[in-house]
Image 1 (cartoon, rainbow, N blue to C red):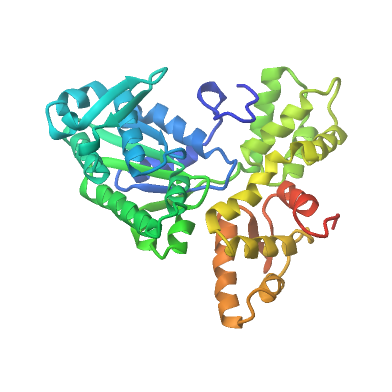
Image 2: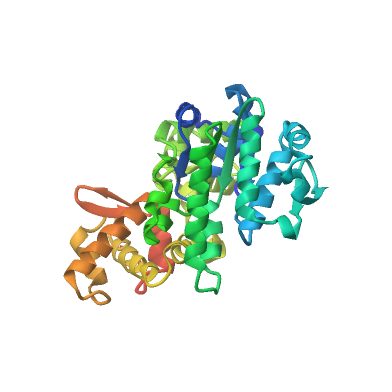
Length: 395
């Protein structure tokens, strides 16, 4: 097991998540899934592990990252290419090559490794029909298919940011088209996910019913014992002595033990010679919070603008600025006051506060306890206090 800090953890680098995946496989027997997961908890790693294990559950897996797809046709082409890369892709090609769908294909090329690229003939490139024909063809093959689509919300935001006035209508058409595929072709199971909440985007656009057929599941950070076991496994792999006390101190200091942050701290400790102490852990975390490593946390601020747009992103930042100054959190009233200068009407402000609290809680920024709202991750709170809040400093 390697110390992976940036890439997707696959194969022997993947750690645990057995309980979560057992739940997902159980739900996929009858339903399609929308996975809601804060950034850096290992969402894509879990999806890749499920792709690896799909055959054991009687399914043909297809994994598609659509974050760089520019439009609906590119989405369908990426989906088709991923299906061809599956071990059953040849069976599909033999099934459709003489059909309308097969004749609509202009070019299929190997794209390196086991990948493919697909292009459709312009005159046949009605993306909605292409997607429907493909999904129907999968249903006519033996076996069941699992289509995992990663970063779907990022793709939708690209559609939404097109300059044309009908951008919102494009997103609506795509979302309801995808819903129809899920409902009409029951032999295909869908597993949708992204580092931005799809539920947040559909609520923002008043299209929540476009995903109301999905079973919502969540993925969070490790619990304490699992985080400790990860650190112990890494220490054994690299032959580094990490005592029970030191491992416990890492878990306590990280606070919200997402795999990514545990791996980052361990990476810093690997550079230490001699016995590692709790003081070394403190120095490692202090280094991670330095300006040279701000990219580890900057995305948390950036994603608010991607997910919420203006002015809601500014409102959310005002709320987080208010919350970061207190380690044990702040009351709902204080968060409401953070919006008062921008939203004078109490009713509108109350509605906006409820909406943004739901977003910030679901996306892993804030958590509620004892009627106070605090940062879920102490590391993110410290970053926010130092790098984002206008008056900065330590609380």
